[in-house]
Image (cartoon, rainbow, N blue to C red; front, side, top):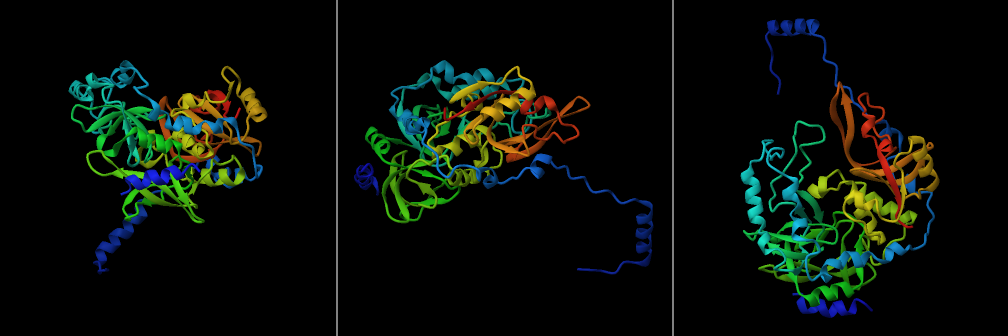
Length: 453
């Protein structure tokens, strides 16, 4: 049994009212007659979010109760753990310097909406300590949900906040987030040693050194050999045997299994002892919030997992513990053993790809209705990706996490903020008076890809 080895492994390391004068009352009555009442602000609603059921079970009810296992589901753990098997960084020094080529003084703003000066970029580059790149080359693991940054700082970098679609919450230094106990490969420390440059299975960047611990090869080898459990519920606190809070569960997390009984799994988790030294913890995980085997893409499982990620608000790069379009899909598919890259353009290259460029809207709709498989097909436009779930009233319906709808009035661009996960058509916001068709999903679709083929 795969987790017997983990038992031994864990044991080794566990350780009030007043009267008014009549004159005043009379004046107020006169004022009321002269001044008309202000009309309340009109509430603008997006027709899709009113007319289309915002209910996962509505769309999953037509699925087969059981479905087959697909080849793509056999490779998840290989991708998940791959950085623990690297012996050197998987990117060149010049490649990891990309943020310093992309962001410059003159068009970058700070948290006070003022232009960042060259001194900021010079300080960041100096602290990045690239002379030490690939000198540590150590295996590590995250202790909690962490941000992974393009510069070694928590300070934001935004584009012109006066422009639509810029400013808050679009911090361009936010590469992504990683869940607790996520495998890492660490290249080196920043000069001040507050940060490490690290690689995960799907992205790289700067993480605070206090948010990781280093592991020895025997630790990483044992973890990979173990049976894994997948979390299928969000935001359930996980505690050590002593009752100390470690982290909260997130869809997309895995832990190594030690043992199980009728109601609970006992799994291996990592906390920090001191000086980035790991403390191995045995944690109880209810079988209500985790599963031992990868899930099938069936009605019950999809309803449960999608219902959890449906609660996510929009979070650029995963900020504030939320998700953006691609991270939502990435996490959603994890319990099903389907590994997706981090960004939308790369996700659109997984599986069977069908080109939709240079086609009319009518042609696109026809192809999608004919070839797309509900809950297994992604639709991609530059900068955004959505999941096809079927049709409603003969309209294609997609599931996605979106910030807002592009608007335009008197040549002035704007955004109608949605800021959450929704079910919608491919013309979300079409009923808005200032709807900008140039920004819609349908007109800009580039491709569709069926993940399971």
